[in-house]
Image (cartoon, rainbow, N blue to C red; front, side, top):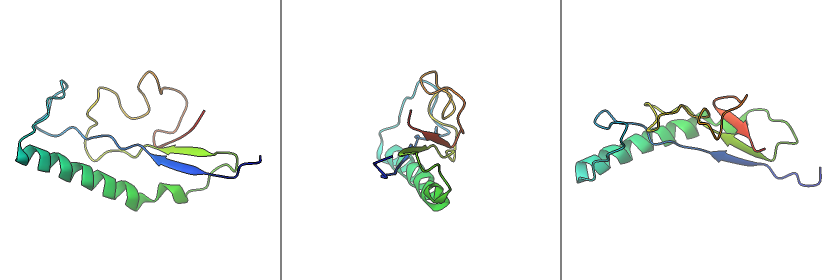
Length: 98
């Protein structure tokens, strides 16, 4: 109860682009890097515009992890929040530190 600090952490996943496969080969050509940069910028901008940190939270939650839905499919074989190391009864868009 002594520390009233609250930290919001936003986990951004690189979206899978149309020309990428599950083996995560990334095109490092100037055009490929620009495409990746633009996709990341678009997802980051949308996540910030959502302003998830303005929601109501439990007063005892000190670290709040936000996992916004990416604009495209994540570049992993798992959906956000469902990988074996993070599975559990949690909201897909918001988790608290344990």
